[in-house]
Length: 118
Image 1 (cartoon, rainbow, N blue to C red):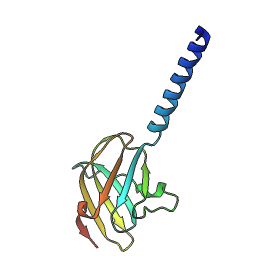
Image 2 (image 1 turned 135 degrees about the vertical axis):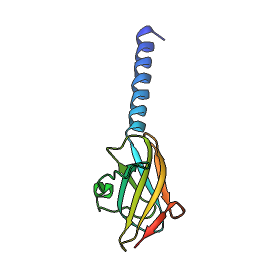
Image 3 (image 1 turned 30 degrees about the horizontal axis):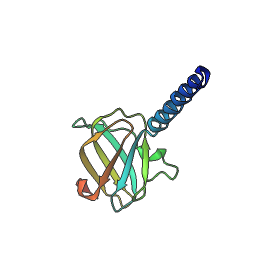
């Protein structure tokens, strides 16, 4: 193999590796709704702070997150959060101490819901 061919192969390998890394990093933070109901409101606050974000479901095309649907979360740094989860039947619950990691999926299930009211 000539030097030119070897150099071209190395360059192609580097470009492919970078594209793969960018594709993987581009997914961002996502909420996976594993509750049995459609989420109509989802707010985050740093754990224990009660400083709630805006309703993050508004970023979804239909403004809600169905069972087994994933929602991209933007404007949130990795860390420990509490969440307010709202449903169409006016029920609202809290999920405490969710560990959110960069470019990862975190899930909410019925067993995670606490302090629910109507």
